[in-house]
Image (cartoon, rainbow over all chains, first blue to last red; front, side, top):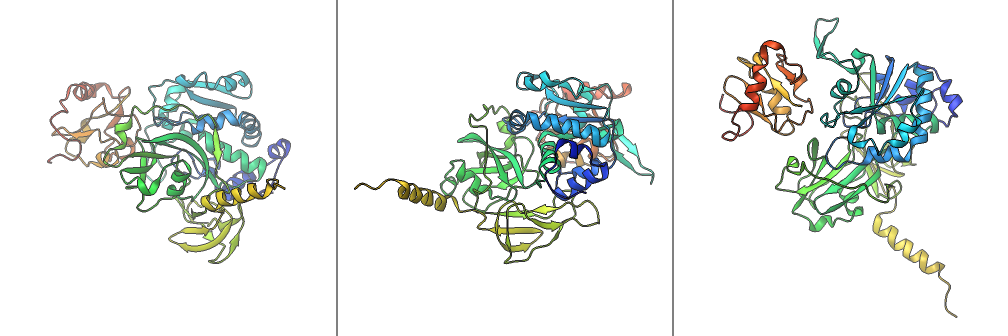
Length: 373
Length: 87
């Protein structure tokens, strides 16, 4: 019953909690906000209150807000389904005060299904326990004693709450309703010399290729660096453009471009406007991908493909294992498996490389043009 | 909003917080580490790292340790670089 397939709202609502958890696990869903914690595991212990963390926080971010703008209907259906499956008594959309107007359409639909919570802008980083303190009367305990005599930091579940970020929940919708696995990441490309773009990018896509698509002349921009994340919280990307590469992870939220001698936090006052074109999908538009079988908090999945195999987009390439936390892994591009090393599955020729695609498009346009007599 | 390092850091100074702080806002104040509230971005990365649970949100600091909030605000950060310091 936990197959990856399309389901109507009624069919989704009829899923058992165990079935829904297994679909999330097989679909490979992990926290897309940056933590990367496996989502299925949070739902193994259902709580009373589901909170949507829509307070993306890095200076200049828009992706989650655009996700909400473009997928209101999906979120409404998901809230209804999650209440039926997991017995949530309450669902809350948590947004920053400053984004009240942006989320007006969500406020309009709020009522019995869910409520709106507005977090003070001072809870700037959107950290989940801070957010809970900011929008509820409850507080997550600082620390908890575990039965084996150890202490661990408190978690939302200690306050009866499951919190997911916006994109993570959209991925849950896609898995439960559309039978689609987690193969793409919403991310923004912005910063120095870069007009903001928000892409839905295949997991494992090359940073250099995405930057080229965003209009950056990577080879001739040695003065620039890019990090995986925003000005404040980020991981290593490419220290000097034109040298080396990095790949989109399940936790990548941005490719932030900066002058290579500067630190991210020097861009703390970075402001952007949302891109007019909204979210642009790069699915089918990148030349390959390096798809990770594991990730933070994850035991790598067992590859079920071999070097030389042809795979299709959204074909399963990794089976979750039983030890630790592990999730299913799926091809984010179609193509040939060129290597499986260090828990990375490289898929080559996934789509036609950009230049080739443009040449072909030109050729097609020429062919289609009526010839002069 | 900012986070505050309190009494338990004295004699410990294990510096796990310094290592995880993404904005390098933790300084060596001699007896203990200290968070510059003007630079703290409230990301909470330091709190769970502290082996002696010395780090509190500024609105949750216990009564008898409120003076650490004042100290953090009044400390002169201009003369030292963030990080491990000399100890």
